[in-house]
Structures are given as structure tokens and as C-alpha cells.
Image (cartoon, rainbow, N blue to C red; front, side, top):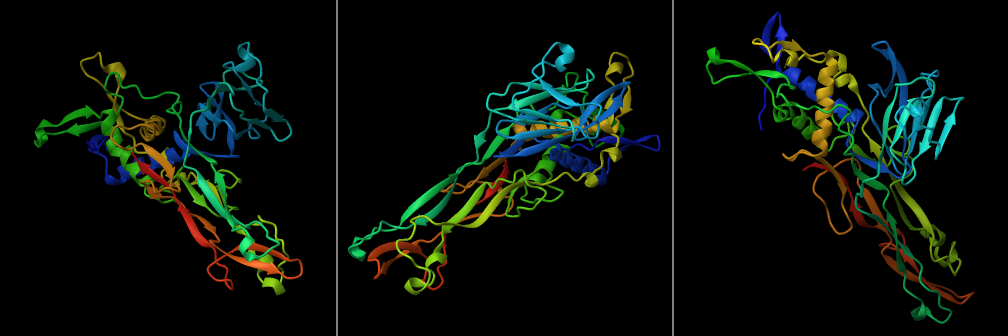
Length: 441
């Protein structure tokens, strides 16, 4: 593990980057994680919007998706994806199994797809088995790229809602009434995805060992300074792995962009889906809270669910204010075209090159890292806890754990119904506590 301090040019001289420069670049890696993750959670019923704009690049129009030039995008089975091209009404988005669609002899893909020409949106509900697709402009060639269908994933442990239900009715006596029973409702609405296709359209290939910024190498004697290019591991040790350590600390603010967490706030703008990932229910004891003289009317329905709480999956939003891409420190690279000469050239990077190094590297590292910095999500299970740091609120499963047998002298019924620690309070008991956790491994 090696921290290297890259060089920059100040007043026509080489100087090492300051701590503030390093922090700004690490923060930009965090912003890039918020923009796009290889490791993510998809919630049942998720709806994800791709905002489409168009810019002229080198004399040709190209799509920008969520501000990124012609990226590969990921669409996941079971979720809905909206290509919103209202900001580029002259460039309607279409889908095809053929690269560049109808412009390359292909046909438009229409399964599960609706095109809203009024609001300028193309929507696809991704069914199981959806093939590899490409998004393209109906009117112009060369503007789009691939839309990878992600099919590999694994559940993040099953969450169980425990609810007690009324026992079997007796018309003989209380001893003959059946005990309350337990109803378990399984929730498996979150899937953990490691997107092997999401390492970037143009991954860094460091064949000549010069793709990363340069730094001073010294043996302690200032007269022996050498300029060397950072290795891939140096770059990750300096910028990416510290950024990932920050991402997995359990926070949900602007230093944890793109991190998934649990919330009970159904109105939050950060929800991944409006479909709850867990609903905690108990037997509705209000029907007999007054006893025989109140609302009790035997026989009661055996199952009367009352919702105590709903829990949702959310994601920390992107906030580029902590490191705008346009103000990144300019690192120095060895110019590959000058390698064959006796005097290799060192040049400044532009912000786009620096951003590409950061976003590609954090995507690769978070997906798979031999030094233990891959990002992993998991929830506690009913059988025990898992390692990691909790993100968001705890998911609480409650139930009434006791019972009482009621009788009705008028109808002659006897029935065991759930109740809590005391008949007067009827407070449900915590059965299980689940936490969504994030960790590096």
C-alpha cells in the first residue's frame, strides 16, 4: 500500500499536490460513485430515470446521459427505466438489439417499451430474459451506445414479518379453544448487484505503465529526485481506497454519495422505489380493546393485520458541490507519443481525463479489489447479524407474543386472541431487528 503525492505545475515549476488537492480529488471519486455504481441494490418496483441531453462533440451530436457523454447504461430485470429526452426533443430515444438500431440495418425493440411523444419519454419495463440492447436516436446515427441488461444478482437476506393470528374457535369451553398461531410473511425485495459490465466504456489499460499521474521518487537526497508514474495500485491507495473507506462509514450525506440506506420516510426524494422493502404488521387489537363490553364480537376474524411501519430503500444523492469536475487539480502524465524519443514529454491532464481515471478506478475497485476495498451490502438475517456498518434506520419486526381467551356468553364462543404484555396496554414485543449494512471486503 503506497500513498504517492502527484505533481502539478505552479508558476512554471513542478510542485507536489497539497493535502487540499488530494482531498478534492478523493471527493471527486465520491461524487463519481454517486453518479454510477458497479455495486448497488435494486429494489422491487424500482423506477430509474436517465436524463438525456445532446451536445456537439467534434462536429457531431452525441447523447449525454445524466451528464455523461454516451455512456453504457445498465437496465435491470424487474425494474422500469425511463429515457427522458424532453431536453432534446429533436432526438427521440429508441432501443434495438443492433448497435445504432435502424441506422445499421436493425429493427426497433418494442417488448415492454412505450414511447410518449408528448412528454418526450421512452420507457422500458425490463422483463426476465431481455436481451442486450442499444439506445439510439431515431433521427440521427452515431449518438447512442449500449444498454446492458443486468441479470446476475443475489438477495440481501430474507426479512420476515411476524404476526400472531387468532386461534381456532370452540363452542364448548375455553380449554377447547385453539392457541394463537404465528403467521410469517417473507420480504425479499432487495437484490445486491455486482455489475461486471459497469467498469466503464473505456477502462484504463496501463500497458506502458504511464497511464497514471507522475510523482517525485526520492531516496532522501534531494539531488536524487526522480519522476515516476504512479502504478494502478498507487493511484488507488492515494485516492480511491480512502474514498471507499469514507463511503462505508455508515453515513448518508454528501461524503457517502450513491450509498444505499433504509428509511421510513415515504416522501423522501431519495427513494429508490415507492414500494416498501418491508412492512411490519401486528394483529389489530383495537377490535377488542374494550373487552366484552367494548368492540369484541366473537368470533373474531383469525387474521386482522394492522400496519405499524413501512420501510423503504433510499440512496444518497449526487452533490458535486464538494468537488466540481471543472475545478479539479491538473495532474501530470507522461505523453505516450513521446516515449520513443530521447526526451519524453510530461503534460498536464484536463479535467475530463482526470475524471475518467477517478470514475473508472472507483468502479473497478468497489466491484473487485484484492486489498479488501470492494463494497458489499447485506442485511442481518433472522438467524444472526452480519459484519458491516449500519446505513439508515433499523427495520423492526414486532408482534403480540401472548394471548388471552375471550368468551361470549350470548353466542357461546371461546377464542384465543393475541395480546401484549398486559391487557390494558397491549404493547407488541420486538421479535427481530434487521439492519442494512455496508462494508468493504
